[in-house]
Image (cartoon, rainbow, N blue to C red; front, side, top):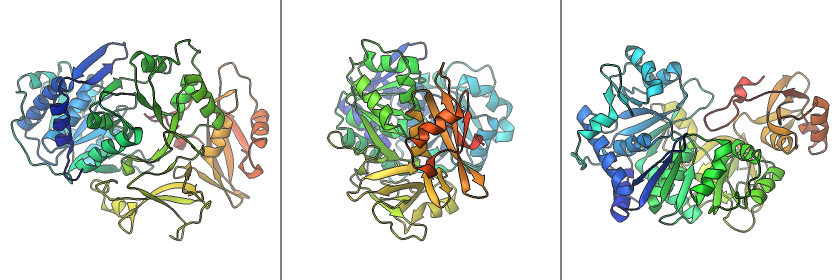
Length: 511
């Protein structure tokens, strides 16, 4: 892989597979737009020339505030062609959230879509924006560029061949952590290409195979688990504009997808859909999966849909899923697998020493920053220093343990471990038990300060439609499945959960 860049990888695939289908875009109205590699490359080169005409410099960050669309991928690839850096923003961000990122990171140009255009026009001076570009359609505002129109004036071949190296920045992905300012994880060109090659090998993906993804385009799962493996293998990306539980499995079957990726909220909502006679008539080989399902939910999903869930572990900073259960054979559910080639895993005690097998501690990932792991955070030296130990071990902040054979068991993200009467309780473990109850659609568990026990466990439960649940019934169910110190002390019933763009429950809003 050595000197490969996102630009060189894309150009190489276009040369090998010019007439192969690259993209099938499924809109929310079920309209499908298709592009071969050669057709899409012409769009990429025109967009790159337009960015050059604006004076976009090498290494300059350009924000992309867009939802799943072909225009997003065009801009993402076009910026890489000229050595610029794409900085995707969550499609749901409002002006305050976007403004903090733009100002903090010195971003002066943005590509946005019609529904967010007025926000940036009205706050242009406040946000110190030099350039606003509308991704599709024609703007009613002066001093806003129309991408589609501007691309039409540009040639199909790149007008300036800037040197781009594998260690150069390609993408900055903003994490949604607990800090006021989201941290921008840097992906080098090598990181981006490595993620693609890694997942091609992990899935045994071949040219012409089809990956369907409804993950948001500004998320690592979409970029590194879907679009990059497709590009590296010469496959087809089936890009779903927005996830819909009632349509997702029909799309899997109708568009003959070979691979897809899901999270627990997706699996649960798919299981809630009526059984269809055609739902086992699909071409799926594997499903990349992350986050927590109970064993009952996993078995129900795999049995109903005749497909295997590949439990994985990774985070934005690791670029890839650094562990994954094997394609065949033993899984040791709920293990997230063993370390993949080029990665190491160790469990760190609070004093910095390495934990013994079976001992819970912080998950640390060994790799090469800038190659197999992100090199750090953009304009944030302090956070970068805190990210690595000894320049090699990435400190995840997540809790877990390794068994005697090196299988990793993930217990929760940072803040998801609850200290109760001297015992560590995994919120994820309790949540999986709760969601295995036939009348519970989803659940979230947090720790609430308690003067006697450090923290007590509080469960927030979303009942299934029509279900009649009581707090006593929920606690009794947990008593039958969990050790006494893990059983919730309180149960609150909710009608819905506030969620992130990838379906994770916003626990910071629960109290």
